[in-house]
Length: 366
Image 1 (cartoon, rainbow, N blue to C red):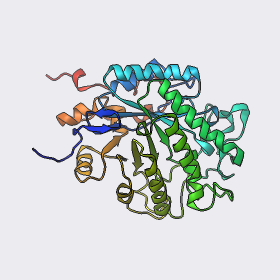
Image 2 (image 1 turned 180 degrees about the vertical axis):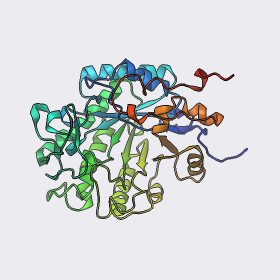
Image 3 (image 1 turned 90 degrees about the horizontal axis):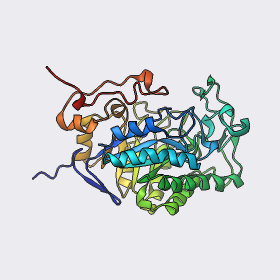
Image 4 (image 1 turned 30 degrees about the vertical axis):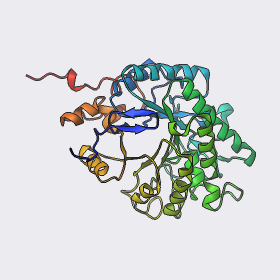
């Protein structure tokens, strides 16, 4: 028998048995108009329960963490009940699902914030690329308010509450969103963090909030049910760092002490060398990490199997392919053609472009 690992080699992730190594990546779809998960979302996620693991779209841990219209939260009883519909549906279909814990920081807008307050960030530095997405359409990014030192324990507590609420909602675990230019990433990278206190300056300080959040989430739920996502080379949301290799090597080394369920590193941005800071080989982080490693960004079946066989990752996360192919695992297993995603329906709307993509079993041939 061959010992080669591929997408259909089972894996034990903490207490969970994953029947395959396909992960549905977290993807914002803006289908929660009242910020509460709903039956349409339950149908969407249950359709994709064949994934070894589903990671939900980002779910804000507080009203302050909201950054986009119609995105779900995990900070109220109503939101817990809404997500329970989703987890029940996924489990009923034989799947496993983690919730992604999210605070967007500076990329929000005052129109999205409680009492019209400014969005918050490590430093009063506006996102210089793109525009804020609001219920009234696109608006220029505002200069955020720098969080005061005494406010940071509250941010940590919000993430911990989100983890407890996710457990109450029936999730199998949580992923801390430390990527893509959102709050924890803003603290970590020196392009957005110019503080001069214990949370700014050297990497040991800039990583402090992320590590405090990780510790609190692990206290709220067992570490083997906690993952974290990083994006070392991702320039999205005007992110950059003067030395990403040193920054992320330090963070990964520190995260090792928590014995997390997994580390999820997206390779997005590696195709634009130098835009987010000096490029480096992300395989370095794989070698530094002591546990299960997920990678993501534009993988197809062949590239995924090659990465798994080479030991470059333990799991592969797929984004757009899962939007258009609820039965992606079946299609890969049969080498069947994939549905093409409709980008016009990625964000917002109803069932069209969301739950209406055909499965192989729904198609007929003459």
